[in-house]
Length: 258
Length: 334
Image (cartoon, rainbow over all chains, first blue to last red; front, side):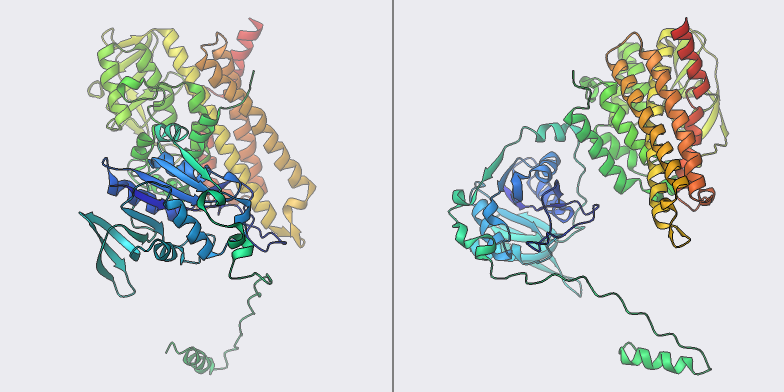
């Protein structure tokens, strides 16, 4: 069984992020790391394929960035497809999905596509389902357990009340929740091996996507303005004159919590 | 000639740094302070799986067959996290000593177990009156006048002692050297001390760096007279002096590890230079950190305390700064 995992390389959350005042988007010109939420998908894929298949990574990132991919390759993925093109700057979720779907087509034969529920820097949370729609594949979201049995995938799908047991035919796109498995740490042998694993770097033209339909030009949205979040207002201080409890009760009633 | 770490060495150190950031934060170190073993549950097996513990062991027994220079940045990261595991002694001293000096069968057996993480070997050098992690050790490498011995735990008497550092389980180990247990002569023991001094120096540099980071964070936040205290010249000078001490010690430590790897005839001299500088650096950074924190590091609840106590323990381990300066003087002045 072969599995494709969509991974995003993001600015290190440990460093304070900054917005580019011109494009009003997150600055992504420094070193990018593997989004931690994607490490669960990589681990899940590695566990599912075991010794009888390959895990291929698919990613879209600026400046030919591969640092995050190398981390996932060091964990055990076999190869990667990276789409990097200046024309992709400003891409919205749908363009990203179209690009990743086209890149998945370059990843060879696959049985399953895994992705995180959402990235840690963008949080749109819709890309996996859009990829499924573009590829014409069934999609299962919020997987907290995944197993493959012959030609079907069985998923425990997280819900507010508990979880649903879902099965669907392969190939399919499944998005996994954080904490679904415990991602392994790359071993030194894995780190050294990752340096020689193939990373196929593609541009938009290689995927047959017009630059006019990608990036800012193809985005169905525009960032008009960025403003600092309003400061929290100071709370109301009540001097207790013996009636303070009534005011607290009123306050909580207004919030409809009592 | 390129005087810098290779990309592989930096990648290994980063991988260990990432692991320790998640698995060995101050809360984890506090667990080690309070439990029976003085260690973080499960962490040793993660280090084993990563390949850290067997880095210097031959590939045939599950190691990676690398050298001291490949390990030194990793041990520095261990120091930064105040890792309460016997990494520098086992990976940096015991493994190469057994590799180089034990008979083939013993070396294969013990190194396989160490690389697989199924057992640990405790180290007792003459420079240190107490042995760390003696309880539960599958074997002991102990120094006597005639050299290093590979000693079975059945024939040693272990008496627990108290360490200033709550995560160090130290013991006095009594045993009787015999020719049957002798692994190598005094030159092998001297080499073990050089390795121990070098890797302890690397840990001290890591500890000093963390104490300095905590301090610069604190003085940028703590306000007095309406401004952060870090804006006062007296504080700035303290922080600059602390940084100077640790940044001047680091190249000596990297050099000592390089010399050990290259079997440089001056490796012993370089190890002493490294340990003397790193011990002094950790001492001065610790004092400055405590002062700039307004003494708050005195309380065990504050994280600085964990790093300070570890630094105090390691400053005198494997030879004090004074003893290593004497070794340097003897070597240079003849």
